[in-house]
Length: 190
Image (cartoon, rainbow, N blue to C red; front, top):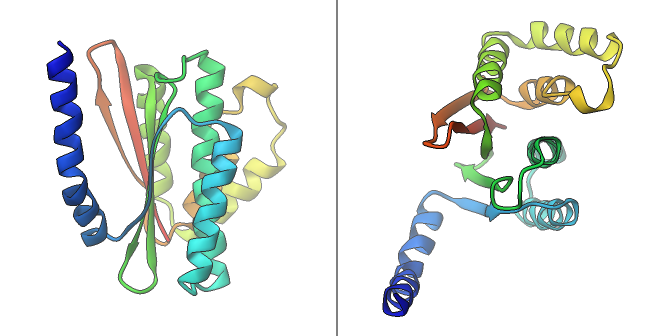
């Protein structure tokens, strides 16, 4: 058994260059996979802001990319805490990539309850079908709506804000897992 583990680590060591090359080809600026805490969200956010500043991204795009990253990672953290998931079960997978000179993708995913995933898919698809004017109106309506109790905030105002900041309709994907849960992933493009 120990030989198998060591062999697996050695293979990963050998593959690191190919992983790096793939990240460079796909212009992946940031990639994270694992348990996510508030302090880790802040640290990665700081690194993302610094990169965007170095890359001389305009302030509007930089603010939108950073805001989407924060919203998605905080949603994952909040959901995991609300569900009482252990660290690995509640872990996040986050990728930020650049496309061309001025476009960025923020992709985030996590394990969720299957029924929550189906409901979230429907919500994202409804937002994706809206134009900018409709999204703005829905955002204002949600902003004025009375807030539900703390634990049930769900993906409401924050998800609307992500959809408004995104230059393309939001896209999502849900993959059921053998344990009855699902992996939900969301893509926003700025």
